[in-house]
Image (cartoon, rainbow, N blue to C red; front, side, top):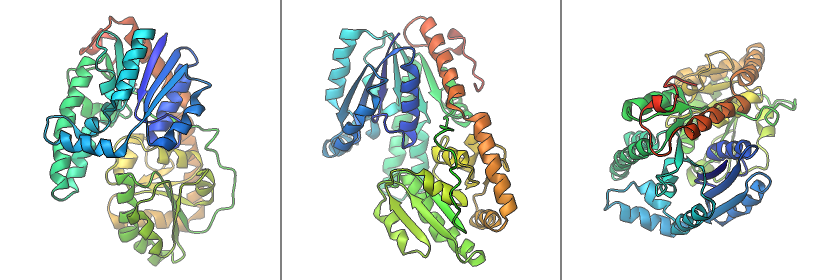
Length: 412
């Protein structure tokens, strides 16, 4: 079968949330099908990553997003009914490339990852199309609005409203939709009840993310992630201001390593906080995880499954997470992860893990076991195969009733 796979960034290397998922899906689908990747590039530097897909994709068409033009498009979209995040990525060169290749190759299926690039598949209503939302971004913008001040509060609220209407249209006109957690599926069914949806969770590479047994650094905490991403920035700034001082009162030598690319000024300023290290981009995050005693995930704006949490747990690292970061994992508390939202409770859970080596070791063992049980890529990609098979066996064109595809509305 010939598949066009459309995504927001070059799906290599698998070093951030969306790229982890898209890389594993492209690699998997290419074992059985002819996969042509169409994507935007996150600047010129991202174009160099195309080479990493040559062994699996039949072709890769990557068009860089120009930041200045992107900002202008978003500004102009304020005066229209279009979502800003969709307008920002409207690169006509990619539109033209997909149209040209569609005429040449006539794909059997188009799979899209991320609603803001669904625009590149919209013109092809006659072919079967799968929309992988992962999460409903409209709800993310709603969360941003709730935590912001004017004028950005107004902008975020407007984007949430516009994007929800766009997500509804895409879900109703594509053959099927995918999200990554049952929480997202519940929200999807409430907001878009007349469209079909299935749940495919993220996975983790259990061979790659495996502890090498490096010596642990006493009283060490770690957080990983792309550090210009608003939820990550909010998380570490809140943690350092509100929670870390409480931990330090109980464990004076506590240290936090913030490990991830593109740290903002707000993140870089955290190095002025005693015991805080900001690494910037590193070639391999595993040693930082392996040397730490506890992973912290104090996210307040999180949606969906956090790959950073899965990777830490695969390394045998106990996790203290906010509830919005914990609940989507569907892992019971105590099986490698504990949750807290209130700062004193969060600090107390971290302190217990730092002080009690027996408890910490047991939690680390449970964390690895949970990943081996529930988060292998093979299991999740087998579900994807089933969805693809059902979509292909159904008549082409939009479907809005789940029974048309024989797909259950229950979590898969």
